[in-house]
Length: 233
Ligand code: NI
Ligand code: MN
Image 1: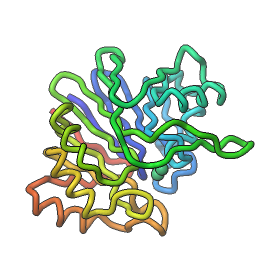
Image 2: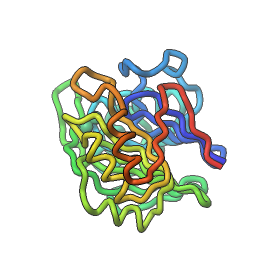
Image 3: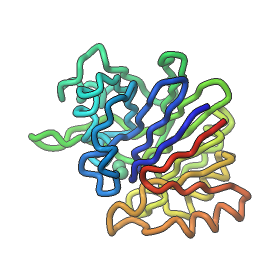
Image 4: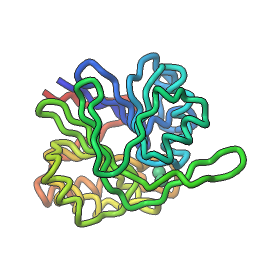
C-alpha cells in the first residue's frame, strides 16, 4: 500500500515501502501548506524536479532537519551541497536515469521548463527541469514537475506505466488545464491529480476545467485539498 499526500502547489509526499519521499517539498513560504505540515519530522528522500524557489528553496532546511537524502540533477544536487546538505546525502542524477533507493526505484524524466536556483548572490544555473517517477512493486507514480505538454509523454506512459500522474494545470508558467488533460491522455494514467494551481493570483483558481477535459478522455481526476491523501492499494 502507498499513500500520496498533497501539501499545496507542487509539494507531494509519497509514503511507499515504509519510506517517505517528498517531491518538491516547498512548505515554508507555500501559502497553501497547512501549518501542521510545515515541520515534518520524517522524510527519507527529497526529489527535486528543478531549482525554482517554489520547488527547491525549502529543501536544504528539510534535508538537514530530517537527515533526508536529496535526488536531483547533477547541477542542482551540487547546489544543495553548497547549501549545506552533506555530500553523502546527495543523489545526483539526470534525465533517463534511475536509482534504487531502499527498494524504491526513482527515475528522472524529461520536462520542458527552465531551471535556476536563487543563491544570496543571485540566480545560478541549476541543470535542466525534470519530471520524476517513483516505482515500487505494481505502483508507479509520475510527478511531471513544471512543464508544457510534449508528445514524448506518451513514451513516459509506455515505459514507466504510471497509474497516477500529478500534473501542473495552473497555466502561465506551465501547462494549462486543457493541455494537462491531453498530457494525461498521452500518459495513459488511470488517475490524474492536479498540482501547481491556486497558489498565486497568476495561476488557475480551480481544477474544474481539468476535470471536464479529463472526463472526455475517461480519466479519473482526484483533486486533493492541501493536507489530504490518496491511498493506493
Ligand atoms: Ni518552475
Ligand atoms: Mn513552479
